[in-house]
Image (cartoon, rainbow, N blue to C red):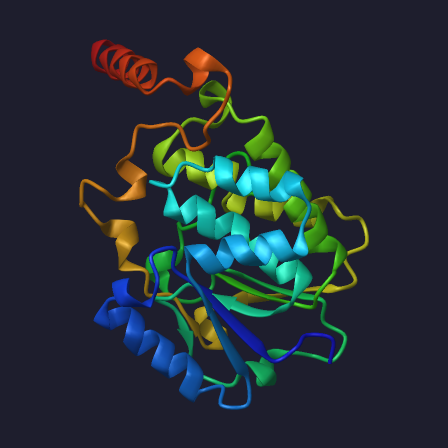
Length: 260
């Protein structure tokens, strides 16, 4: 089969910062895929991989991402990684309940899943106005062959987003991550490729044994990326990347909403 038996996971802060939930999910993922090789990357290993496999353009883009947005760093890195290496990427709080080999066909280049059609709790997940098809392809899991045209386009589109970032277009916090590096550009970039013969949509992830357990989406912690008001990408555009300006702009927006 075109997709190699390699499982990849990342956490910018490393293994020592994994929660018990993370560790349990990783154990389940490994146990259900004993014939797959396993790879884990922290921030330093992410930088090392990009240096060894990509030109300065892509390293510069990665280093421009504000480190308080570890989610955005992980987004961009997973695309770079999966394009070069292929295999199966999973967020650390997610796992499979079956062997991944059972859901892969020999000619698959990219397998994609949706939120809808399985657990009713997820029916409204992943619906964004700026996704042309209306709902996202999940990217907490990516199962693909190396060097496929779909991830190539994802890498290019997200790199352009980082290079052209400004707060008026992409904003900040959860919305900003979703639209700069997250499932919005990921989904649209895949669908831009006219030849879809290598993509297989399998519908609901949970119906196929891929389980999402990222409770941080519901976190109220003040350091959670979704609550941040700083720019996602460090820019040279002065006022567009100024933290004080962003805070003032956000307050004005809240006042307008309150008075409307």
